[in-house]
Length: 235
Image (tube, rainbow, N blue to C red; front, side, top):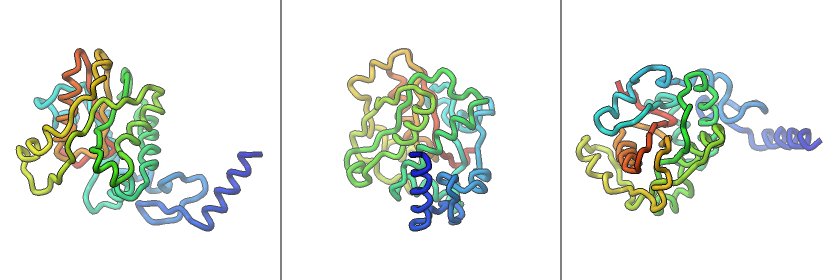
């Protein structure tokens, strides 16, 4: 009975306030969640998790020792799929990201990418940015994975300085710009011996993930793997 009422209310809401696919702009059907079937099927998957020493893992090689790394789909500026990241990050729709990472866990199950992960953590947001935006989109992504795997989400890192723009900076300048932005939280040593999955929304230069992964690797006997919802083409 309650299921029927919820379905009826959902249908009524869709009539008054139709839900729109952020990629193609078409109205979603009642059983379509955040993306329409066509756009979901056309998601430009990286499938890095299926490739030994893939492009993302190569990108971090020599910078920080990680176990493995993958991203769910490719990010290209101007692509219709870029609107997914913009909606999650800037338009107050982080729950779409949580739904997408839950799907990623399902889609990547055969690759065993998530096997052996003990806890999930996210790249943190400075309190000033958090107050302005109202949420940390990367935490929503990380929680979608943690819930799907039935493992803990932990906040292992803290942002102590606001993240300033990286635009027009070279690789060295980007590194110098952010290397003091993050610290381990005081109780992070409780993660000793764990395999930690570090999550962010998108990887472009990889500077932020590198800094955060280095901090996590300073915890005794930890393993670190990386997951981002999207990735610029790193080849």
